[in-house]
Length: 174
Image (cartoon, rainbow, N blue to C red; front, top):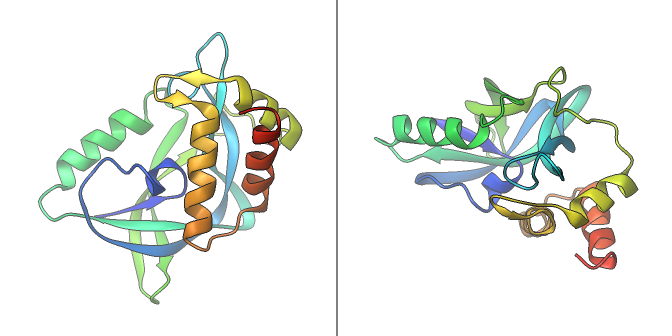
């Protein structure tokens, strides 16, 4: 079983894996398009978290994590509890291209654009202001942004929007 990570799964997968490989998912892009009322914000003061937003011609570079043999069911249960907390994500099994040339089917969580928490297309400055001031059950929203940006950079995966957001949130004091 493979899992595609593009946000916090890069630095906090929470499950045992036996391999991790750079990978690309076509048809989606990484975006702060989900209002977070649990993990990185509250219902009273929502934060923002990354989601895979469908777009024609888009792609998202991330990591494919191969779940350790024998841990498939507990991992699936864990991921469903973590990712499907508000039903804003939809669980899919989609083809991803691994950097070594293989193609595998991976478990992927994509945003439901019809869900009330979907907020795609928000200007970056507005995203920075929201992220700067939000805290949820898994900690401050800026930590999520900075950790994800740093891990993408370490992996050699450039994401200009996340880099800009990270710098802007730091400038705001976060």
